[in-house]
Image (cartoon, rainbow, N blue to C red; front, side):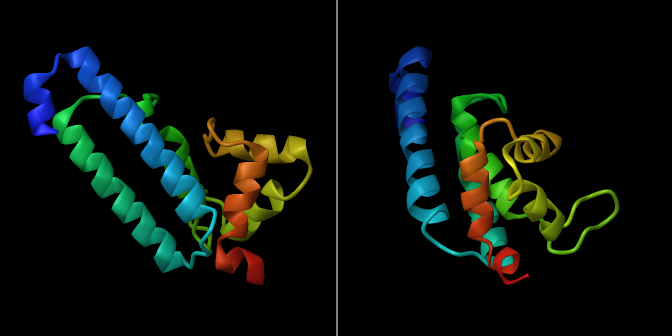
Amino acid sequence: MDFLRKVLADAPFRRIWRDALGSLQDLIFHDVLLRQEFTTLGAAQLRFDFEAIQTTISRHMRYGDGSTLAMPKLREAISLLNIPVDAEGDQKSLREVGEEIFADGQRTSDALESLGLKHLTNGEARAILAKRLEASTD
């Protein structure tokens, strides 16, 4: 990234990384997140790894949370995957969120909105929660 930053203008640099990070987001979302099952610790490790990727990217370029460089769909998927098993304070538990997500379409949409998830579809949210082992054993 350092080399490309030095030799390219800002627009081509961002365009290259937007495409590369879009491909990375799709790869991790489809080939890792939707194909593996996760325990609480596995979901936490995925979140930690994703944050390390984001830290590396942010060291070389600025972007907002809504930017494609922030990989918003993957960020939301990992956030949903990391909902705690037990509720703390005003936070919902995995079981409560699971009941809302696997309910009818309107309740699913409302649940995603209340969690602040704008980039995931109802079907994607259901598929992600189905990958959480603790959600499927309750």
